[in-house]
Length: 363
Image (cartoon, rainbow, N blue to C red; front, side):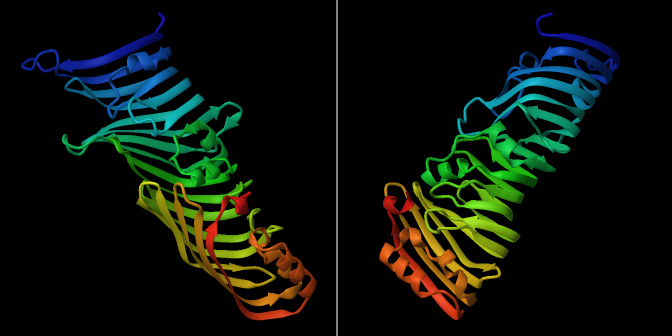
C-alpha cells in the first residue's frame, strides 16, 4: 500500500491468566518501502519526530508482555528527516540514505539504537563513520527526557552541512560556521536535556582540523584539538604539530607552527556577554618560541576587547615582519620596522595588545 509492504512471521505465547495484551515471543519482519514517519508518528519520546523516512528492513525482534525488548537486523533507509517538534535550536538530522547492521535495545530508563558498518550519504558526500549510537532516556518522570548521540568518527565538513543547528545570536559564532571547517571529528559525544532553555554538553577530538577563515576567525591548517563544551562555556585543548595559522585581520602572512599546545576556555558571563581566555598558549617554530596569555571580552553591541601579552625568545630577526600585527598598527610604524629590522637574534621580548578591536580594525 501507500505506507509500504511488510511480512511478519511470529512465534508467540500468551499467559492464559493475563489476557491477550501480555504476550511474549519472537517476530521476524521484512519490510519494503515502509513509511517510518507514518509508523512512528506520536511514538518517539522527547518531542522529536520523523518528518520523512522510507526503509527496507529485515529484522528479528524479541517481545515480553507485549513490549519490544530487542531488535536486530539490517536496513536501508532513504530521505530521512528527523527534527525536534519544539526546540528550534535542536539538531535536525537530514540524510539521503543510510544502510547497515542495526540493533535496538530497551533499557531500564529508555532505549538505545546502534548501527554498525553503516553506509551514510548526504548529497554527494559519504561519511567515514563505521559505528554510531542514539539513546533516549528518562531517569525520573518529573525530569525531561535526555538524548545521547555518539559515533566513532565524522567528517566535519559533511557533518556541518548535514546537521542543521540554529546558532546562538553571537557574531563570532556566525564567523565560525562560515569559516569552512574541515577535517575529522573523532569519538564525538552529544548529550541534550529535552527542555527549554535547551541544556547540552559535547565532547570530541578534532583531527587534521582546517578552516578557510573569516575576518574574525583565523585560517587554520592541520590542527589537533580536544573540545569539551556546553551551553554556557567550554574548553579547547590544542595538541598540534606541523600546522599553520593566518589571522588576516592581524598579520600579513601565515605563521608556521611546529608545535602548538595549551588551553582556550570560554564562559557565558550573562546573556549577550562571553569571556574567552587562555592562561598559557605555547607556540614554537624555526623562527621563535612564544608563550601567550589573553582575555577576550565579547559583548553584544560593543566592540571586542582584547587583553593579550606574548613573551618570546630565541627569535630570528630575519622573519620578524611575519609576526607584526600590521592590521592594527599604524602604517608608519610597520614601515619603520620593516626597514629597520633585517636580521639578528631576539634573545627575549614581550608584545602587548590591550584595547577595543573596533570594526574598522577587523575589516
